[in-house]
Image (tube, rainbow, N blue to C red):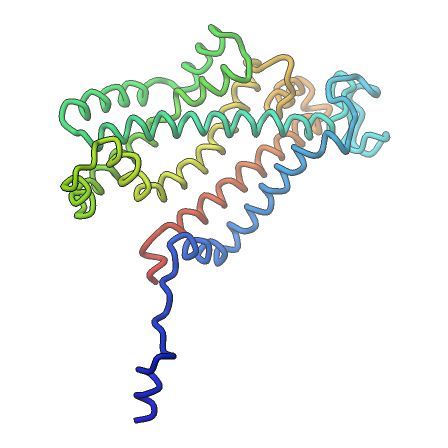
Length: 296
């Protein structure tokens, strides 16, 4: 009897519900690979932002003999074909590469979510029209189309980011459309509509927050895709000549790869580590936002 009184007494309290964001963070912490990727990505971002103020060697000035191997001068990673410090180029190139990657990913998500939300919410002729536009961009050769855009409008960082974003939004649009088609039939959406909520509120305030988890994962992975895309354009010479990026460093030093491989190896390694870190974080976010894994 004392046990029953203890359970039902005023001191007994129901456990507080755990918020979905806290549940997602707990799931993310259990993924050790994702934590490693997050640490690598954070280190790359910090070095790219703070590094130029600590290591003040100009990245575009000739400071030593060309093609000096690593460890044979005061410039520990050696120099490129013009005698520029590779370490300074990597630190400053990280800024440009990450800027283009994040900017292009933001544009990708903006276009994809907008198109997918309208198509999935309204359906009918709106869905058919927007999906035909999506299919048109999906079958375009992305690299060739981006090259044409950059060549027509000059290879500035803004134009490169826009070109990557314009050709990369189709998968995001299809995922958003599928999520909106699923969620718009939920009871709470019908209840909001019954009390007079307009279409704008239903799309942006009711459905989109509940469709956000898979879109966050796609947005994270889009950054890695944009970085690889920018590296490909820079490798082909379609990059801002006034900006140093990892892809441009690879493209500039590729004629000398047999005799001085460090000019290509180090920027390539930076791209590899960055994209790998983003992929690990995206995989961790996918597990964290998966409701089946959370319940398990």
